[in-house]
Length: 331
Figure 1: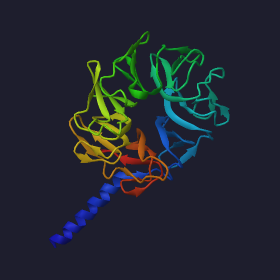
Figure 2 (figure 1 turned 90 degrees about the vertical axis):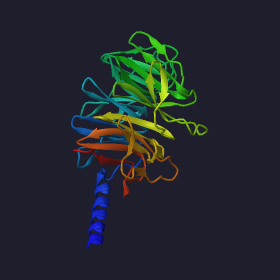
Figure 3 (figure 1 turned 180 degrees about the vertical axis):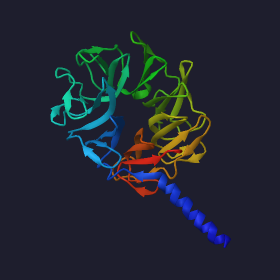
Figure 4 (figure 1 turned 45 degrees about the vertical axis):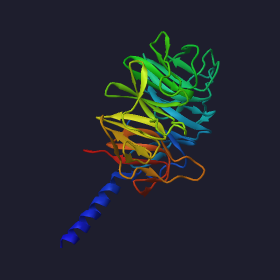
């Protein structure tokens, strides 16, 4: 009798663990790089991916001839940045905006071409990426709703943007990191690892966390660090591999990327930090698609679920297509 009860409990536990992860409809056909909630819907962008999810089904937002890397909401409109020439039925040139029903050009005379990051700071939209001398802007520019303005000289390729303590923080290629206070650029000396791209930035417990690409020859260097007293300090517990996405929600910091260890535990491409320790999210993300990197690229919370986008075919042991969701505790 006791053995029978144990078997039943084991099965129930297994079912519950699997139920934490769920597919998101039929998923998406290729890599999902960006997720954001806008007007009650979850928007997804990526490589030939442009759609929104209402909690039950996907809706296409028109075609795109390239890739979306970033979303941001500015003046009640959704901005999409990436590497594309057209989006929907309009010319995009790396940046376009959506009002809930149609796409439109941001500025027909300014063609950024390759936008990797978007953020709102001091009532302006900042766009960072890999572009040079576009209307006087190199790697970053700011849009006030009417016109573009240059930010500063000497900026390198930008992969991520984040506002912390009233300062716009910029992360980019080969360890590039700088601070912008609205009038002046403050280059930050790399005290962590000058060879590691800064791929993600997020604020957690009033501290700025950074996600890095860990060089293959630095096995003991964490792919995450905390900015403190003008320097990057590695997180207390090692996260190996690459960290592409960071999301602070409630009392947790969620990290996604291409890694298999967080702290002392095995963690497949995703983990959660509570301020003291890393915890896993069930079986995590797995299922490498041939010819691609198994990785989580973006994170977002929508209707009580943590949505995870990237390039993968399994989540929590169930088949998915480049996007999945994880039921959050108490939801």
